[in-house]
Image 1 (cartoon, rainbow, N blue to C red):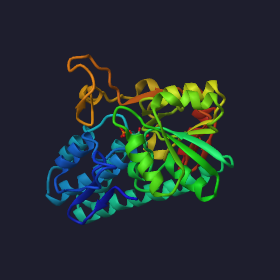
Image 2: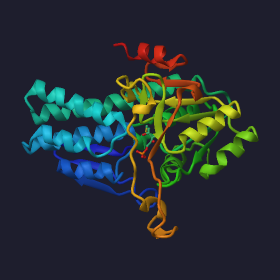
Image 3: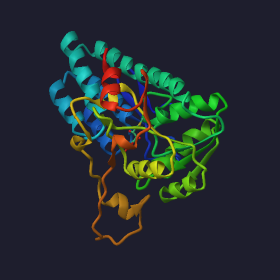
Image 4: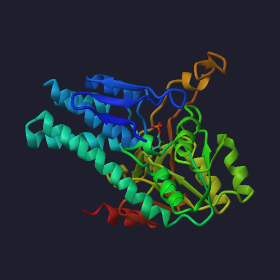
Length: 330
Ligand code: MRU
């Protein structure tokens, strides 16, 4: 399953706002449209928005536009996932080296895309080792092929463990308000034949209390140097519930999602989304039109609730300040 295709002179994105009802590809030739597609979550998930922005940068180069301006506009699309800024910095460095040559920049963006998919395969293989036999895994939001360059982070580990015959069931949180779990994770896992059960966000603690969850695997949008990390809103309550019930809890992420410039999670910028996302459900009003709304897209889980961090370089455990720094060394 793929969500991002470079077509030489345009970028095609699988519109994730339409899934699973329709598989609709949209084609972009202007970097401003790509920034808007990221904002509107046509493409979403930390690594995927980095890759899409890198291709957006290539579109600006193809038209001979101001690359600093393109970088600034693409970077302003969503604030939390550090992969977006990481990918744009890489493109800017490449542009400096090649004098903005569009073909060379496209090759750089494609390399970044391929690297991400390959890292996910590695993460899957390494992460599958922590998955017990007959595992019943809980996941939140969508950290799958749709959210990355391919294979997925948390769902990459699920896929690899499933190939080893270790997965009895994946419980997918529906993930209000935008339902990435219901619409995207359930769709992705069923397409791969992984046994999947959809649950409402408030149901996880009850499953844990019944002893029906062996492991929680989630993705990440930005991890600080001490292991505190931002992920889809609701991740923090899952981590609290997992700790209370003695269920191991892992974040799965490429090293490009670690932001060593932040000592802890307090400095991670949290995106606030429009109120209409909570007042409506798929266009239908479900709350008073004027009710005040609190709608942060992400929350920060303290590192103390993490069992481990699965990356393409290995699985880090506490103390995370030391183990993550070691993983980041070249
Ligand atoms: O708002 P979204 O759908 O972009 O949020 C996505 C997540 O929270 C994912 O878990 C995270 O980006 C990791 S994707 C590999």
